[in-house]
Image 1: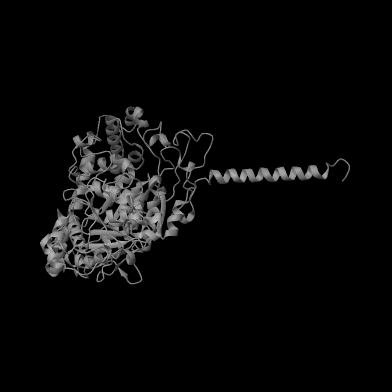
Image 2: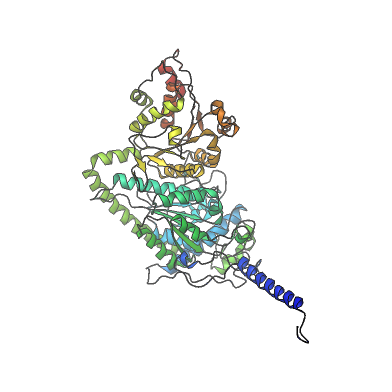
Length: 625
């Protein structure tokens, strides 16, 4: 120790303090997340999905000088009419502002923040005909963030669907065509252009995967070397809420594994959730997570029309076996400066500022849509109808060359099934002197049902062997191994929630009748999807085996003693618990006759007595009553 130098222990203490200070600075920087940088074509550049937080974090993002990165610009001219689409985007914002203000309820954030995305989808990218909303080869658009329903209603109206302005003004009113969350056409609502009932977050993106799976099936079944009858894609728009819900992860894994490259998820990445800014509850790299699943991921400025258009066009062309995630960096509530970029923009907090916001957008009238925008969409419709008419010519030539396929497709489209009498005749009687489990009876019946109802599909959450619901001549659905896209047996994996959402998506698509199986006790994993199927009146079938205390040695975790009662509380859910094999025939037939809602079949693992003292016909027909 030299003269004038501090003692060694003091030097050590100083060094330690400096080290701790460096660690603190580094930790703070880590917690803030890296600053957004102005470059990236794909998520491999590891663009942060979170903006750095500052002392001004609570202020609106636009107000604190937040600039969206120039993440992916079109390299060449895309042919997008940016002037017309920008005008339409702002007018869509105005429609959302006026309707939500009039209802004194609703969600402004998504319709305003995603307006440019909507402009590209409906004004340029999507394959649709508003005059024939059920066109078989249309692209499907599913708004997974159903709370942002004014996004959908605004674009459907401007795009020329039969959704009058008076109904846009009636947003959230009882019996209007514009309910608070989108509702698939049913006995209560018939709004054209709605492809799925959405609202429970996360389900919509998985419904989209189900629709995409059905599109793959129709392509494999009906396209020929000479005629491409089907080439559509499915697009879903979601936010952080959908991707935080676990069902979306299950569905994303399934979609990648089965190669659904016709599925496009547009992720409205605005750094906001309802309670707080998104960074308060998430710090993951969502883009990297989806890449790990096996998706193609691109990150762009969601307000850049050219970037949205060129990315979507590239996705449509990329038949690479990968589903697509378009991460769109957006400003939630864009157009209302007082709340834009904050969690306050999510709901109706911006309503107080609507008048001034509309003035800045150049909108002078309530629910203003300019003649120029209507004229622009007339041009879009003309282009789409030309494509539609060309498809009809292809269909006519295909039908002439493929009579059997055409007859089958028309049967699917009309939702034709045999009568109860025809189905009962096609399913032989069981041995009346043999007592068997109803799941065992089901394993026989389901194969006859598959022959009688050719668009009937089966699937299981990793329990085909136990549920006894395998279609022996149906083949397996998907990519690789022994699978193909014409396969009727879906292996959903241990993903009950996704199975329910995928089944709903297949049913929303419209050509096929899905069924799915698991143990009865595990149906609670997928209850949210059963509720949507009931509301949307979807003809799906749940095969739920290992009924009640008959699985006693498994213990109380596997004894669904309360479950059947809870299923019966769903409005519009048929719950059938057959007593023997002939009643099981009646139960399966009943499920296939049904066109206006789902059916739960409750089947036993243990053998049950055959009720041979009652005539077979009485047991079968009795179930239908």
